[in-house]
Length: 359
Image (tube, rainbow, N blue to C red; front, side, top):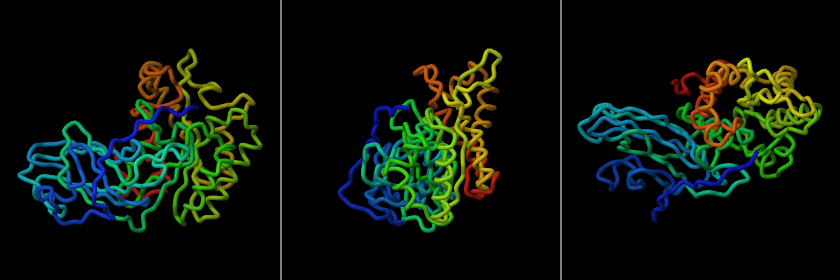
């Protein structure tokens, strides 16, 4: 599958380099960290790494604020704050009618797809929402954060431009402080090419630490991969993760929106059976069982959701109307599918319930 044009996030470059934003009030009207921000964006000159971000949301009027970052990653869903009487310090936000939220973010180069452009150095955040109000922000190096590495294709990756979005791009908004997503999914990759490209598996594998999760969803581009090779490639990825002390998780691919006349998706195109007759979801399930690896059956989950919405209702999950594309997801679809992944991570006790956001 092809990569789409880059829509680089605009950033404000500041003269003062920061390793972290101090907790005390700075020169921006007594509001912590806001010297690094404009009305709708913040930029922090930090090196690649993992960072905790704490924000205070709210002000004199009621507000609703969301935060995205780097290559269009959703980091905090729209969050309401009641009207307050002023702007509080971080530790006293509740007294002023504001709310405090925290999340952990992965900063890397390239900041989006591993074979894409480097992007902007440092950490870039975009302030959005229906009535945004950022009252304070603090960025500090994360300590003992757990990484969720993503290995996948264009249905998972940090898509660079609207209206495309991979589910991995939307997953961070469902996670709280202490868990970050390192999305190494890349457009057009199969199990063969991901293993063979030195910018992909050879780059990701050394970064895996004991206790990290590694979610693998590769199938859409294995169109000419025979079953034995596909199985062996999945086994190689599982073994490589375990050798590093990580926890592999196999994920069956999201369905293509390809309906039968009876309103079902029971066909090879929708369910990722390739031209050689290789049933990718079935092989993935088999490898997971044989290797005692946790399985997220996203094929089954997305099939049920798409069929429940029907031919017309399911169009909004994909780019059917925008690009006649029934493979790649819209922001709405990617967000829904990321929510399914979040639910499975909790259900299978792969991420503590207290580390995820519900809703």
